Image 1 (cartoon, rainbow, N blue to C red):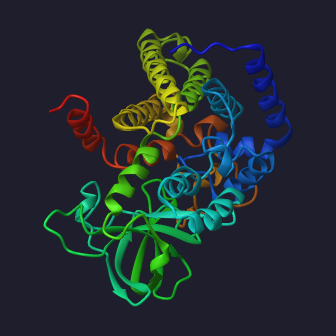
Image 2 (cartoon, one colour):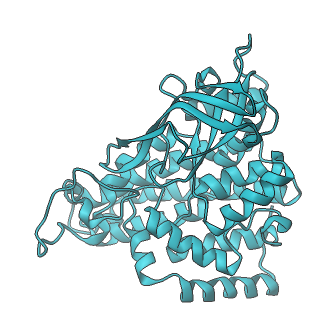
Length: 411
């Protein structure tokens, strides 16, 4: 697929750039440069969400009738690329990129009318209740129960690794409504208010020191049956549909290109092993070139998938490919950044970064104590530690390879 800019595309690009010049404040750009997670902090996320919502660009991939944008494939690509190049912080994907598309595909008219506008406006902030202590990539083994009681289900169990559950007011959940011979059967997709009695959120602190993940305990949590999305007992079908968007619902390449250019600038500043700059070291330059070629290959694949999506097709096994290559290339870049900043990667100084959540064990510092090293080095180590999760969440990359082997190669 070839993407060529027409006069209309160039005009659209200029419109996006003008919007970013006006609305993407220096404060938001600074947060993006210092981010250590794939998630921005809640306040930054909602500030940027509001700006995009007011412009009508907060969910461009949704159908127009539900608040999306009537853009061409090239315009979607331009939008993603310009946001990345300008240093825009990411939005939370739980509502806009996961629950929203599922409701559009499987929700009742009443569910769509109630939830979709609230997702767009940011009034509802969602988290995802999939993984359990004994059910991660083997998600079909989940045990959280939902027992019928009149017009409700009574839910008991636990969810884990739940991103930003400490901020969310709603959660989309997979629960077991019946025991069947095949574990994928008897699972139901249900929406739960986070302020429901019996629901308790506890923090999980990551390697990087950030409180982004959580575990949630459900004790006799009463949920109306009208909150079921799809049919009772057929939630696995809904969950698979959602995971296509979770794994492949966004473009990795624009952000990877931007990060690679940032590493080039680091290497142009930092000293190499000899007398010159690191960028002049042939071995490091080769690593940069290898990463650039692989990111470009991923970009072309994303273009093909964007074309398919524009024709109304849902992402299939390709979403597993994007998730696998995107997260592994992201991890590669964190390793190159570590190599580039060398000894500046050692200090633990979360006060100098923009973590995706609170850092409970952050050292207390005096007001006049400055961070160690150049500013581009401050988030490198936390980002490296945080990004180890990339090949685990949304289904491990080993699971993704199994999906591709079965669906594409017929193995």
